[in-house]
Length: 219
Image 1 (tube, helix red, strand yellow):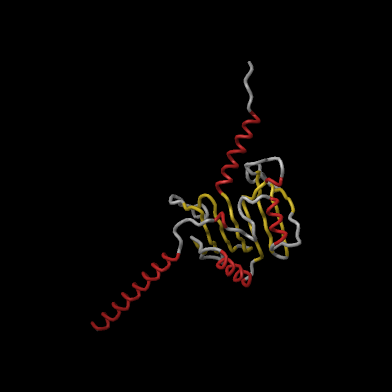
Image 2 (tube, rainbow, N blue to C red):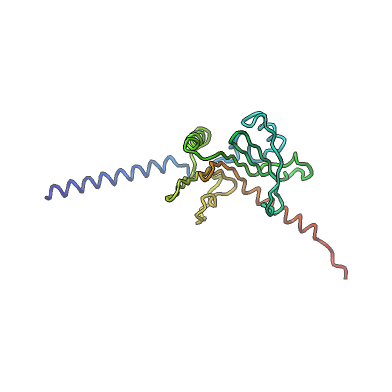
């Protein structure tokens, strides 16, 4: 009986050592520092690209032979006054690119730049396998992978910088500067967002609105 007790105890100890080793291996292979999200591209499109550059890349690459179209959000302006975007679709793949005036000029649409890039395609098991294979080939390992226990939903997140103070359940809320997120929902989506540029735009638009309302009391 005593011999059996020691055998069980030893097996438990070996099992615990295995768990620790696996945890250390996972920790070593997961990047802790930020990644250069601004150097990432989706179908050749990067953050900060001018519309003229984007059109050229799209025509020569994945969406060859298809002309992108200008569209506007039907709902309330999504980014406090900026509701223009480029959209292009070929077969079942779609690109949605939110654009905003560059710091250089606000007068011509060719000087608008990309601050949010989204690529999507229909969800099927086969598409998901191919999508995730391409992610692993093209980009570094994500800093965070979140899986839902109640559905087939999963998110992979890459952050330019990570916040140490965020307690949000939203996986992208811990990111600062810019981030990229892959999500499995009704569609397979890959999205790059420039958070710092959005904040600058919000400040700029607020100042512009205040300048238009500025007047001198004359009484």
